[in-house]
Length: 237
Picture 1 (cartoon, rainbow, N blue to C red):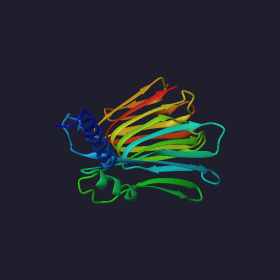
Picture 2 (picture 1 turned 180 degrees about the vertical axis):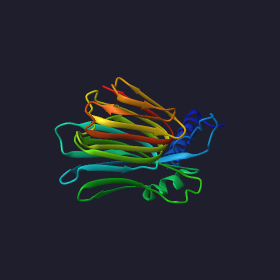
Picture 3 (picture 1 turned 135 degrees about the horizontal axis):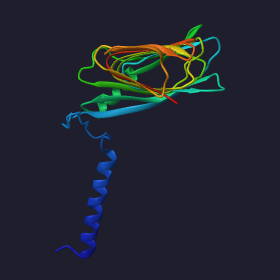
Picture 4 (picture 1 turned 45 degrees about the vertical axis):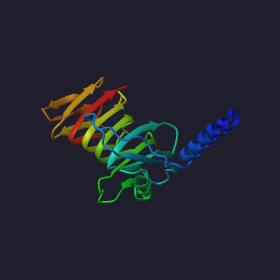
């Protein structure tokens, strides 16, 4: 028969073994849940990123996304563009998802008149899901061009005088706030979606089931929002 001291020693040894096993175990995130509530049996690996660039000769920021959220904010009194966010890969094991993060890239090109931020990922996903979520702050006088496939384009942006803001999203939601004092020709169109505006005075309004055109203020700039299967919701502040 074991003594009390021996029993205590065995309990402590068992607990230490259990804690050691946990420490050595693979770290992973719980499985994803599909929209319908079912378990996809996928786990995620993620990696943050942060870049700051000083605008010199560039007058346009172009963003090319694939999957994820692109959050935009126009900032006054600065020439800096800050690009931050998170790269996420979903796979069937943590090791697999983690190993793919290096192939999911945020590429930045500084051209003479344009700054380009582009998501690149493997062409063959092999069942994985690649996502990049962006938060981008830009000078308020910078032209914006955004092209994305799946996700959300949102935020609060300025439409530069005599400048251009052009957004295209295939699937998802375009939900943006712009100043009520905006002066631009406004164009919104969708193939299978809806278009709505709030707190904006749109002169010479021409509206159909899938398009909306008009003039904001004196119409000095251009504000274009186009989608395929997506909601367009533009509000004034």
